[in-house]
Structure formats: structure tokens, C-alpha cells
Length: 308
Image 1: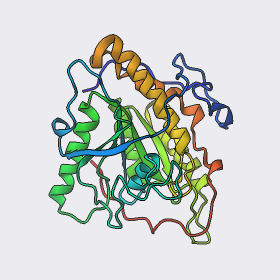
Image 2: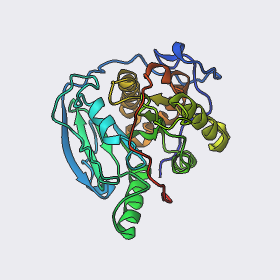
Image 3: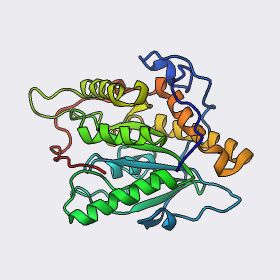
Image 4: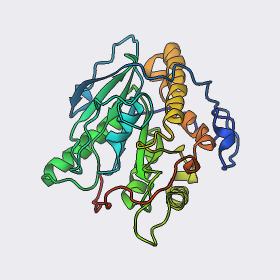
């Protein structure tokens, strides 16, 4: 279990370089994020897959420790596409657009069934976690996903932050709110990432991404402990919108991890990230203005089931 976390009750309006462009106003926090550095993704490679935290890449007893950023969300939310975008492995999504994908993008919801680690610049990891919700597989196998996903989030000492993905082209889903509440109640540091922020459903009365983002913020504030919003980022894997901002934020968290781990080891430091993540929320809360809406959009949303 992850313990001794710094209080993350209030975000700081000066938490990151993009804070001034946010429309949100929030109380100040004693936690401030450092200036982003070493943002560029130079190398990205698949390391391995596992179904238990013990099967994840080994953590040297005395370091160096590699921060991990775990991505999870409902099936078909665009998780693999976002990971490829961040790694510079998607055409048109920024970062060079290599044709060789890093994470597998599938038309079959629920395709990811393992914890997949991707090494970035040889010093930190992007982690692809199984999707929750709809999956064409046996109920018993789906339950196993929940077990080892929970175990990873609660037990992995080098987890810097989880990123909960939500589809901005559709109204907020109950499963996404439940996932956020589950992590907040267990002090798992996390942010919310809106995907497909450039897309709008074809239906005449379909709300735009901006309206879906606003409703998501309202529901999170109403359901999370103390009404404390996590950072919320708007992205588009198709256009690359939000990529640089998200990479800069991960750079800031990596620096915090390195600072605390150098002073007290894993037991004494990683938990600061929960406070730092909340401190950045003023810089992030649904920056959908940078993502261009257009007709069309993602495939029709799939039915949700109980998550955990």
C-alpha cells in the first residue's frame, strides 16, 4: 500500500508553464512544479509484458530508479494511440511521426491484456494497462485484469502517476468516474487525460468535446473526496494537440521523483507526486480550446460494465 502522501488538496495557479492559459482559478498550494526539461522523446522501445507487479521490470535496490507513467481507461478510448503519439510513433500526431507503432492499436476493444512497459530515453517508462469495461473474453479473465491492474497501481513503488483516459467526444461515463474515485480513495496519484478532443459525434444533438469536458469536471468535483480535481489534460492523437504539454508535465514529475528518491529512497519520496499532480491542475483543467472540433469522430461508444 502507498502511504505517507503529501496533502494534495489545492492546486497552484503557477504550477506549470501553461497555467496562465487556463481558465480555472484555484487556491494556491505549497507544492510547486519545477521547470520542464529534457522533454524530447529520443528513443522508445518495448521492454516486456507481465500480469503481476512482480513481473514488471526489476527495480535496482539502490537505483537508479525509473519513474513510470501508467495509462488506463475504458476499452476503445484511444490509449494505444495516445502512447504512440507521446512516443513520436504516430503519423500526424507530432514528435516526428514514425510509421512503426510502439503500442498496438486494435479495432477490437479490450485487446490489451497485460501490463506493457515501454522504455523512453532509457530512463523512464510509459506503461500500458489493460482497458476496463467491454472486452470479448471470458468473465474470469476480465476479473484477472482488474486484480493485477489494482495490484500494479497500489504496489508499484516507481509509479510516478497514473493517467486516466476519458473520451472527450462522448459524455462522461460512469466507469470513468468510478475509476477516478477508486484511485483517489486509495491515494493513487493520477491525472485525467481527455482523448479525441478534436472530434465530435455525427449526431445532431451530440454535445461538443468542450461540453463533455465541463460535465466531466462537474462530476469529478461532485464525487471525488473533498471535491479535489486532479489535473485534466485535453489531447488529440490525430493532431498532436496536448502532446507537448503532457510530456512537459511528466518531465516535471520525473524531476520531483528524482529529487525525493535521491534523499530518501523509494519509501521516502514517490508519494510527493500526488501533491505535485494536484498542484498542476490549474494548468490543465480541460484545455480543449487547443483541439479543433470536426465532424465524424471515434467509433460509437461501447457499453460499460462494472470495472473492479
